Each structure stands twice: as C-alpha cells, then as structure tokens.
Length: 148
Image: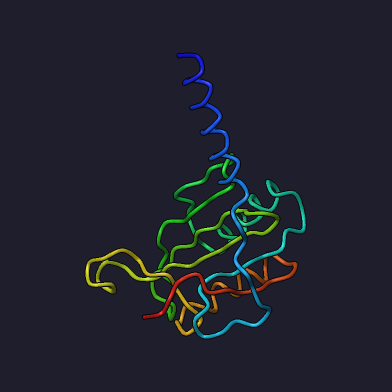
C-alpha cells in the first residue's frame, strides 16, 4: 500500500512540475491582424510585475475580479469604455513573461455567449496596447487561437 501511495505522490509531483514549465508563446515585436495576446518581458520579480499589472488595470478603471498570488494570475470584471465596447483583461506570469489577453463583448454582443478573445483587428486592441505601454519594458505579440 505504501508503494502505491508513493507512486501516486511521485506522479502528482511530476504533473505539477510540468505545469510550472509551460512554454511561453512564440512572440513577435509587431502585432499581426490575428494576434490576440500581448507578451510583456518582466522588468522586476514575477510577484512585483503581477502587482504592477493589477495597479495599472485599477488606474485605468478596471475592477479586479480574480487574483491569485500563488499562480500569479488575475482577471478583471467587464468594463465599458466608449469606442471600445465592453472589455475584460486577464494576465498571468509564465517563464519570465507576463501574458496579457483582452476579452470583449457582453452577452448582447456575443449572442448570449461568453466574451470573445480580442484580436488586433478588433476596435479594443488599442486598449491592450495602452496597458502594455504603461507597464513598460519589451512588448511583443502572438496568436494563441486559430482563426476559422
């Protein structure tokens, strides 16, 4: 029985280690029309960078919906901005980079569904760029979803 328990714990620890080493998306310095993710190079510790993103979002009028200091993730409640519609922002620290995505649309915009991942071709992309500019440091962009 002890061997089975030890084997189970070993398996779980391997899974946890693999989850912590997830690959950062390959990014480029200029956004293409299908990009949906901003990658910010950390200029400070991961924890300080995570807090800095939260501060920037609050200063821009967003309210934090979820924040996890162990996973270094955060997301905001939806916020209406004139000319940009309704936006939500989510960010997480992965391998020395802060991955930030913006979601747009209320239920009336998406036909009753969940908010959609914003891409560069969307009106709200400028808001994501402004958040990156305020954060400072190297900014790059990548596409994480396939456009059908």
